[in-house]
Image 1 (tube, rainbow, N blue to C red):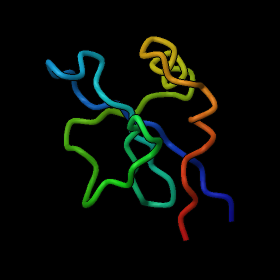
Image 2: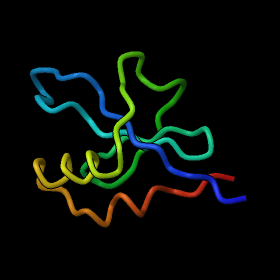
Image 3: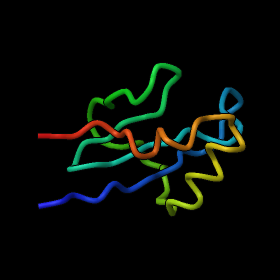
Image 4: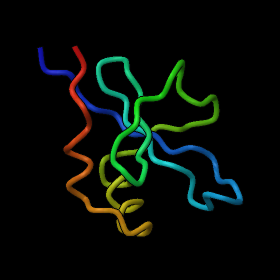
Length: 77
């Protein structure tokens, strides 16, 4: 079965004025970090909201991230 990746954005903070981008794939959450996707321990942040793929692309463009990263979320087993 092909599992769809969903994207979320965390709330704004002083350190991250546009929030952080999270990908949820196969029940596992990853946050976009300078070295790629890092697996989040535990549940997703409480105030993270679902965003569309288009919104995730806009976030990447605004933050200067490569759009190809959205297709590179690690596979889960």
